Image (cartoon, rainbow, N blue to C red; front, side, top):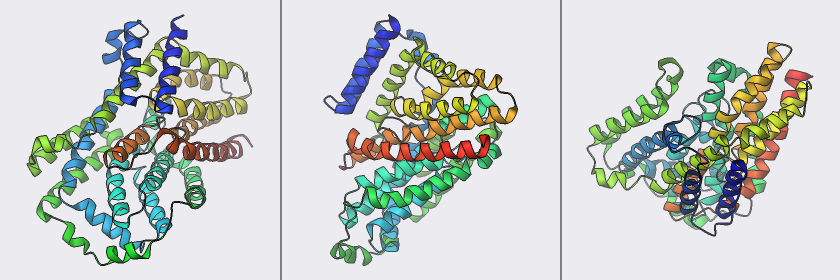
Length: 428
């Protein structure tokens, strides 16, 4: 009965989030409270369990980066980049979109997709405001590009870190096995965006002329402060890159970086804290508790175990189930707790594989499905939620379905291409 209750609460909450009948923060708080009050997730585990509660690493990573971005914003850097990007693209919307997607996709594998979106989204909003074009298509395209690009490396997408740790896969393993298909899918995706967003990509020469006349260097309000902030940002990025070597969580790196940024910039702290997306952080915490209820009551593991047992000793069938199953489930549950829950199931299946090559193929199928499933809906990945929060805060609100109608198309396309890749490379 507990699993039925947990699933019922989750389905009702997800319906309310999807239909936007009630504010999503209110929904997750009530749903999380119901899970805890009914005993579907023990109170202690909500706050202290790594796999069955709030993932504080994600929450504090977001908090640290929000503070860093808020301080950098005061230097005028984002205005500079917005004017520079608009002038380089000569105001052509599709050309600008491709530029921003490439920047996002190239940065995501080496930072992580959440951090990349926090840095690129403010620039996007500013350049779209300058050109007087809707920012929503650009933000959606960037998030989709970020989730695709982040799949390429061990540190680019949080699920990859979990899988790499559990499976003993290195940074180079991800480069060799994941990067080739990510590059192919990204190229196809760039071509697809011209069709998906064609109605929104309208060129207005009058607005472009006014932007071309701007001097981007004048946007920098404090060059010395900017130099100090960029040094701190560089150290934070280096810390993310060295995560696997120094064994310091990205959340700690972000918080230390935020502290250093406050020290070197000496900002008005209350003003900086107003830049933090508090509703987004609260939404994440509530969402983690909701998923924890499904984890603790065995709903997710039951679904995973059933799917795997259905394929028997057909390991290509198992890889197919993992790939498509993870893409579907990952589209409805945040892919971080989903991957944390399913890795023991995959580990058990890998142990039955006839050789190490087939075992690794299962891990890659699992990773590809979870990563690309993150594009499926507006709440499927951390970067999606963060982008929607920034969009709402800047007056460019993106609804659940506005994001999801594009995300589903990209998820289906990328998952099918990934399935062909897994078949050709590991089972052909």
